[in-house]
Amino acid sequence: MFKKDKCIMEWELLGISLAGLISFTLYFFKIPIEFPAPSDSKEKREIRFDILRGFAMIGIVMIHIHSYFQFFHPNDYLVIKSTLFLSNLSRFSVPLFILTSAVFLKKKSGYWTSKFKHLILPYFFFSVFGYFIKYNDHSVSEFVYFLLFGKVFTPFYFVPLLIQFYLLFYIMNSIFSHESWRYRILIISFFINLVSNLGIFDPYLPKDYHAISILNYLFFFVLGLSIGTSKPSTSSTKPERNYILNIFLLLVCTIVFIFSFSFQTDFKNHHLFYPIFMMIFVWNHLFCFSAKFKNAISYIGKQSLYIFLLHPFIIHFMHSFDAYTFGGPITGYLITLILNVGIPILASFIVQRGMILYQSRHYS
Image (cartoon, rainbow, N blue to C red; front, side, top):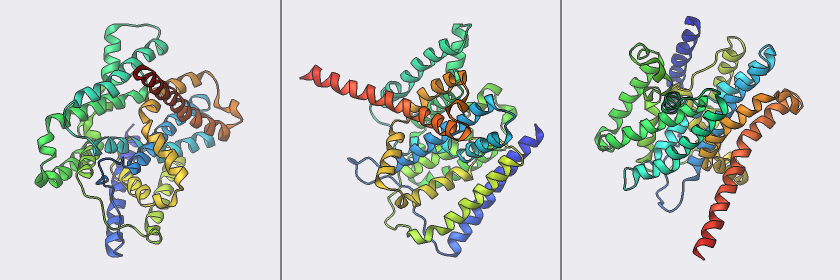
């Protein structure tokens, strides 16, 4: 246990060192980097944040696919280390989801009505359904415990985590929106997040709360709020000057490869450096993507709630059969990924089309 925690700590400190190295390199060579900022237009949705959310949603699914393959083939070391590598590469996903959830957050009329309708209520119904499917012995107290801590399915912890952030923003909105305090709060949140990541708060927090601790993601939430009030950059990063980001991405991938294949370290979701680096990398390379690809990824981002709530059911039922039945580890992995993203999107499409048809007939 000590060795695993030591690897996590070393990875966190290594990430911070790499962040410092990247910052120094960009400053020294005068390389401009465009940082995310919302569009000035209130009518037009900022598609680039949906693209970031789409990548994050795919990454969350890839993290869970590793556990699925590990369940059936724990001794197939090459396959398990490969899925672990892909899982570790995807560890930017949850922090990026927290960040993008905060970007457009505003305290306005109907604040909690919207959260209840679009998040809390769907989460409750899916939790009830999942609880009766997954568990044999049922009790009200156990269900309430699972609901509060997001334990019906492992990925469901994200909803109680997000609700805490919405509550924090609602209570402390005047502080977060204070222009002169913005950077100070950002720096404070960074150090709180770092201390939390290193496990210093763990002995003082209830054990059941560790998984949904907002201290693990506080910096990303505050950064998302800061981005939401920032102005769009007028400068753009030239494609040929993104080579430095490519070099550092190769370096990061190499380090993740070594940790995954040599030490078999399963990274945590709440490291500080890696998610921010991946956000900047994707943001500054969007020009490389075709319009069709960007539209597809942004659509996944827009349907992320359906994917998030339905995907655990799919991966749960898939534990009834081996992924290798799809034709081996490679095709099995790809088909598993497609099913866990595609089926929720199909369900989302059917529900939304049904609502449109119902409304058109109801008001015609």
